Each structure stands twice: as structure tokens, then as C-alpha cells.
Length: 276
Image 1: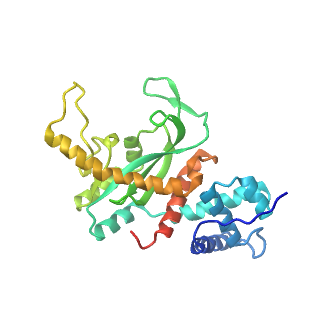
Image 2: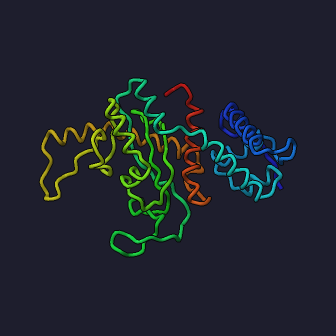
């Protein structure tokens, strides 16, 4: 057995903030003082190690001196506490309008997960893997997000199975209606071709004609401008998935992915507080 020291590269104020949230949650649960295996701060460190380093639960539980079952319970408690702090879409759009911003970026991403056997009936009437994304060629969950003009994540949706199309997901989450209302007040949305035809106020590039003809110069120029502005939104997903390594491949229940990504959003926004 070899013992060594390690440093977790997250700000200490972030761990203290999460510990405070966990302490409040314990009071709301009615947990008696001194009856929990870990203090709120050690509990917070366990959760942050999982998010930042994707440390296996066996290692987290061993280091904390608790059982694996207790480790999972503590992890899920931390995820739920953080996810509950995630902002609402209406509040995010209102803040953007109040700040005088011109537009936001809508995009979707796939959060990879282990293989899931659940199936559904595809468009051709044949069984397909519900959590498999043909676009990304892997299993995962579809998560929609709203980003600033320079690609900082402002809001993320709940998760849907990976086979869900981005436009279908946006409608299912009620995103389109909120964006229509924001557009009526002057806040436009930029999106990729996967959202084409979604509605007024959400701008997407025009697809090339199916008959082999080319786009006219004005339309091609518009596409180039839209793409150059919208592509900055890719940074939002990258900020979440590269900073918090647990999002590289979720090994928990895939139905928990929405809460996990919301928790990662809260952690990211705390680290960048005051910048956006």
C-alpha cells in the first residue's frame, strides 16, 4: 500500500460554497448533528473530485473511509444540491435582455454514457437503440444549452435519449417558445442547420438545394456570417466537458445526466462569477 498527497485543482471558495449548500440540505433533511460519516466540507471534496477528475467511487469511498454504497449516496446528494441551483431559462433570457445583449446561441451536445439496452421504434418502423446517436455514433444523452455570444454556458436543459434530434429536443423542453418571446423583445438566437425551420427569431444557415444547384452569393454570405458567429457557441459545451472530466463518459444511470450537467454548469458559473 502506497500513500501519497494530492492537490485538487479547484478554488477553495468553490468547495466552501458547496459545503455550505450541503449543510443547508442536511438541515432540511433533518439530519442530526454528528450523525453523518463526513463533514460537509469533506463531502464537498468527494463530489468535486468526482466531477473534476472522474475519480472512481471505489477510490473516493476508500479515501473517505466510507462504504461504496454511502459514497454513491453522497455523490447523488451533491449532484442534486448543485443542480437545484441551476438558473431557469426565463431568468437567463431576461438577464440578457436587461444587459442589452443582441443575441444568444442555441446548440445541443451529446454527453456520452455506457451502452444502454433500451430500444424504441425508429422512423422506419424498426427497433433502434434509444440512447444511441447516429450522428455521433455512440451512446449518450442529448442536452441542449444556451450560450453567450462568445460561448459561455448560461443554461442547460434536462437530458433526452441520444437518438433525439436537436430540434425535437428544443421543442420538447419548451426552449423554442421562450426564444420566440425573447426575439420579440430584441434578443435573437443563432443556431446551426439542425434547427432549420424552427421559427421566427431563431436564425439558422440555409441548406444547399437538394437538386444540385448552388446558393446565391447573398445567401452564401449570410451563411458564412451566421456560422462564424454561431460557432463560438461550441466553446460552451467544451467548457463543461473539458473542465469537468466526469462528463467525458457518464457511468451513472443515464437518466441522471441532466442533473449532472446542470451541476457542472453551476460549478462553472461559480468559477467565472462576475465575468458574464
